[in-house]
Length: 184
Image (cartoon, rainbow, N blue to C red; front, side):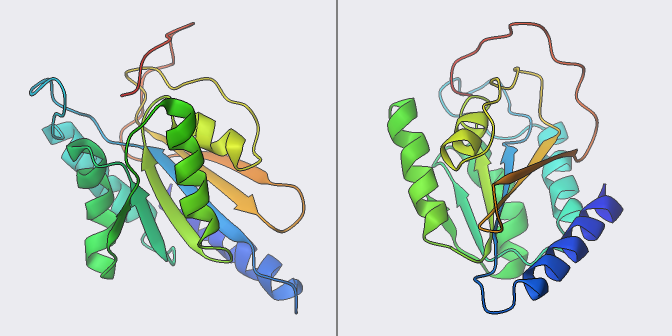
């Protein structure tokens, strides 16, 4: 995945250069937190597989110029985000959990404060697709409980929003049909 992401970044650089005096696009990279433990039930940390996935995210984004990192205050999202933020000297911007619609709106507002930059958003199974939609991307179904490898890149400001889907780390199993779930 690292090679294909590097190619994507090269294409984005060419697009930004061709825009000339126009504003550079905002690139939003969205992932769900990595694999979480079972305890404590209300705010579990990452499992060993989750720690490995967070390291895989670092590798996938190695060539990306990340300007900001946004996450919720849960342990699992912060641990996933920290793997990318700390080596770059970035502070994680925390957006409080609230009712889904309010939370998604708050994350979108935080992203909009970084116009022309590259922003990593670490969210949850049901917020990542909703954030993509609120930012102008397509409507996507919530992610299933066992889906952790999705890497979504949303490009804003260079024409209609463009969504690029990729993966990172160990592959997730194929999604189950109608796997509806609450915030994870």
